[in-house]
View (tube, rainbow, N blue to C red):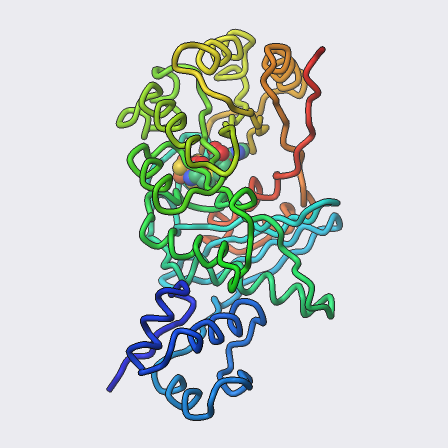
Length: 373
Ligand code: SAH
Ligand code: SF4
């Protein structure tokens, strides 16, 4: 008895190898891949330019499996959050954020996270398991084709992907890379490398590998200007301290599709939001270990177990001004989908904890702070 392969698990080379094993040529694999990712078709019988015999063969050994949906919440501002069931009582969230000039999908890479950042509800939840490539990609596959269907159009909807949902993508590297390749593939979603962002808390060796294997835009969650504070907020810093992290970022730039690294900085009242911290950051990135970068300040989204508070708006703006006065492009994330965050809180028990990640994923819209001249 043969097992059935979920074709969402495979990038184009993987599908080509799969087809080869069935005695089919590579162009058949390309056709199949296009049906799945460009047309959103899961039923082999609808793949009209594939020979009937191949369709029969495929039915016996392959399928295209979407993730079961637990809930969907749509905000008045157009943001949509989906909660997907990944089995074993685990759920992950995906958020669609439309803007005037782009539409971003925020994707999860793990159920839970092992890094355990103090300000992150996913970190507090602990690690459940890695998502497979297919589970990572299924979030894009579903969202893109579902939204096209609703709009009654074949036109591409999602222009940007950010790996900023639940989980640390670079601690699930082997599943991440094939999913990224399908996002970038011209026969898949054809997204530009500049419009696919991997966000990491700083898994240094994997930043180096990503540069070689699949250089996309990189966002690094910095959150602190020195090791003592960062050790406390992002425990992974004890393994990969700031000097190593910044060196890896600098090396990455040689391969990156953009000529800067984005630093994310979660603004925590009285913890990392003082003018002194901003000045230390400037010294860090403009100093000898420095590198071209942009800062994205994220107002902390509080949750009770964290014992932390969101910085005041005045503190965030003052912090942003110090950075931008030093010539560093700085943006502040604006809240999106507030009304569905509320709805999210109405979800039942254990699911509620797991969905808190969506509250920050919905905060992707940025307001540029114009550097002072
Ligand atoms: N694990 C990766 C990607 C997922 S987290 C990483 O840490 O980069 C995506 C972003 O959300 C990170 O910058 C993270 O610091 C931020 N974040 C996590 N919890 C948050 C919270 N409670 N409020 C605001 N931002 C948060
Ligand atoms: Fe994991 Fe990122 Fe949350 Fe840290 S911020 S616990 S790395 S998901």
